[in-house]
Image (cartoon, rainbow, N blue to C red; front, side, top):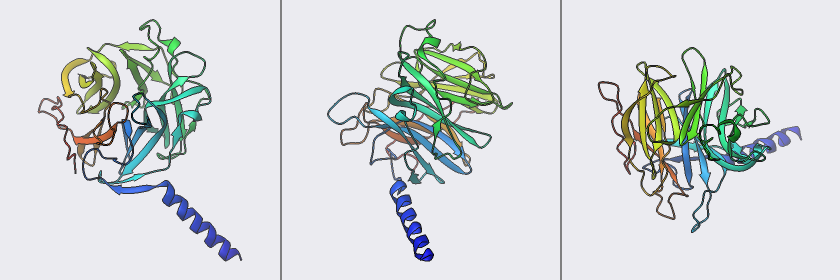
Length: 318
């Protein structure tokens, strides 16, 4: 009897894994064609790349942002992909109203911290929360039980209620972590070693034509801060020898993404190659600014360490 019970459990578990994990091969841009995905962030961990994205669910022909959950995809070669079970929803933050906007996951000490944008339930405006997990695919849980950043913490810089969005985290060579975020004004702050508390004041970052979507990466001793600018959005970037700046503007990196007013990027090195991960509105069936799609193209550098302008392609890296 025990043998048959164990066999039943094994079969059920195998069925559940099949239901939860969708495995497919990407052949062109957009990468994920069977559902709408937006605001990608990327993490490289143990020879796999993980893409975390919002799930655009606005039903056509309506035109508004409707995002209730985040998705995670992973690959060992950037071609064969697995979509894992939904790892986190806006409703998992009991203090929030909802709205699963842009986010990023980062690893520290074998824990995975997910910084997300949600609408706060009691403090007017957007806010930043933190979830944590023991695996890059979750399950994730609210790490604080409260927001890390709320709109009332940045009122001296802007008068809008949506400037506390698009969190990105960089862990420097000395182990110090920094949170960057913002809309119309870019901010940054040190994080404590526990990754869920600020360790100092919120400070402005001075960048020309900053709109939103900051992303930090580092190469050859240079820090790169890329971000969306103007509207409809292009991606521009600045460089510095220090995470604290000053930041020198270097120009446009990515032009307006096709059929989408917004543009949101992640830049990672994976197995010796650099990649630019972004979204557009290119899925033919009702795609657009509110039903977006993640794409991947190669990123190259000039001899002086500046970045070459990204060529958006329908072929992608495939």
